[in-house]
Length: 452
Ligand code: GTR
Image (cartoon, rainbow, N blue to C red; front, side, top):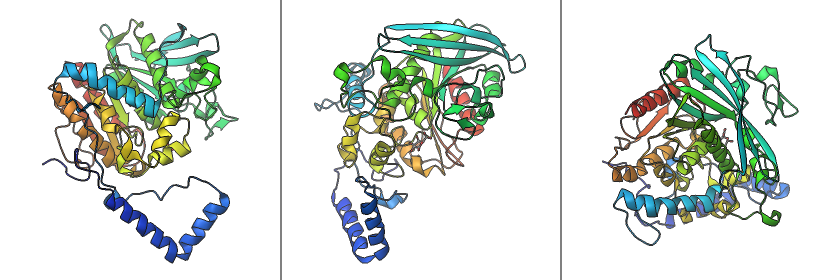
């Protein structure tokens, strides 16, 4: 039995239930003085876009119908991998580009790679490489510092995990030879005047089990996401956006936001990896957590050189279905982070049911390459169940290629990964984070697929 809830494909969208919800809410306002006070405060402080309360109640998830990944806008049903590749996949990609993440440019006019340091790390188990990617156009110059740890015990080229980090390359381990990141950083412990200090060396080490990754024969490649685009709303003037100013300084509603910029940066890292003699370019997995999990999915959807894609707790705008409106919603994410998506995405703030896609189709764009979606049971903001359902509804596209998908059709119990097919999934115990448990599954999944 497939999981049958309000996530049916092809069932009509019944607007009645939503209307009932609205009526109920307005009644509460009339009868509760607390609600009236809250309303007055909101009016007095003036935010025009006060969002409805966050929904964590499964019974309040609206009924919805997901667009069928295998039916084109003109009604054509896709029945062969060839049709998917030439017709439906480009169509979906273009819809995500124009309506959600924004259209990114191609390679920059000037790009060069500078190896600034090679040494031993992790007690001689790894070769550490420091590489700077220099990007330039006639408008700006940008440098992205890439850190690689390559296992020294190896025969030939090695497969790799590549993922952006939140706090600088120096934060992923206590390796003293990694230069302190000098780029703009969001406020946080050990960050002074938006710059990292030595106090932040190694602070993200629990999310990056470098030794274990090396022991499994993989290289780890990482870069600070703020080197690509600082994570604040500056009207898209800094970071890699500065390389490509829009004509006349006027952005189109479909121009790239920050997630698209970070994903574009991952592709530039891939450009470098293709030139590195230690890396097996056919076996590069892209991985990311949270906003960088959204980024990993979008990078993998756009750039088929990523042979495997991992989304860790990516939530709204990542693996979670937008139509469920559980936890973080499209309206909320567009309000808190107006720079993450293209402006056209804001048109869907209050009408997600009109989106010409949902996030199952983002996952489907990765087919037939293996993809792994991970949730955490306490991470309700990211809608763990909605992440599972998106993975489940990507399956028809994998089946089109003759590839097994999840192998289950119900949300699995906590800590029981479904990893036998080409779509992996788990919901682990605990909070929004990347843990040793998560990495164990990714290493196993990647080792199995890359061994083929
Ligand atoms: C939250 C945001 C999420 C997620 C997270 C993160 O504030 O609402 O979408 O991306 O940040 O990236 O840590």
